[in-house]
Length: 391
Ligand code: COA
Image (cartoon, rainbow, N blue to C red):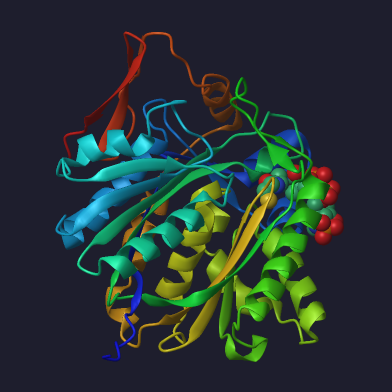
């Protein structure tokens, strides 16, 4: 019998995309007569992205995936996993539209995954398994969402939109994911979206306690699987429906394991999400992208990634950051993506929100997005997408 060297499998690249517009929470606070500190400090958010009428999860997901394909090509990609809470069709996977827009080879399997905000992490786990079995293959994971709640509800300031494309491969450039993971599931009605609604229903208070329970439960399960000690983890990055949620949960974990709580250690991972708002499945990966782009002390360090999807499923994964990961930083590109958004007034945002429900009625959408792909409209009941000529 020969001994096999263990295979390094993990995240090779991450790209992010978001909506064309942005609503500053200062503007919403002024309109609603709320102290802006409630948003900036109380929930820990500064702004949220709003899609243009010709944008959705497909256009944002394709934009993020295009960046990854432009950098690495399509060689070895035989699987595309698209995770979303805000799917555009009850049957066809959003990733099939992306496959067409990007001109990916026919020899590819595509499927969509759902479990609220957790689906992207399930997709990464499946991708890791595929690559472990076939190390010459690479898997393109796309996590994209539009977080929509009814206006004039407590959840309104915690909306958002965005996508992350994650390339999973052997011998990755960014992070080697460790085999042990902690998982947790509990049937709870903290957030859900019935099939006839385009906005989610949420019990905000319950979602905080359900998230904390899932984080502690996933931690205990990780420990039972032989995972690392708290002190052997340099950084944590969390799913961020609003960044204060991650702070509340992390404080509870430190109490659970009897370690001191240092809120400042979480701040870098919040940098991008404070601007995009909640991006559901993409949130944890946008948080990870911020950490990798902006934290100077990660090389060779272990980080823990906590994903939570209401309903509820939690998973805690760990990985070792590659010593030379800083050669692959994308901070300039992300600043461009966030900085080029067009600011909306509250009236403009609310008009877009009112028109934002999915429809199967035939409609042509106005040309607004500056992104590489657009949702052209519905024809004969089917959604049509097209590339946008770039300057
Ligand atoms: N300055 C600083 N902080 C302030 C403040 C001010 N002027 N006014 C209020 N706050 C704080 C509150 O003390 C509270 O902090 P705490 O939670 O640490 O006690 C926080 O701001 C929120 O205030 P609260 O009145 O509880 O908020 P709310 O009823 O408006 O709801 C959410 C807030 C987050 C619960 C709501 O936006 C929501 O449900 N969002 C969706 C959550 C979600 O996505 N869940 C599912 C995914 S996990």
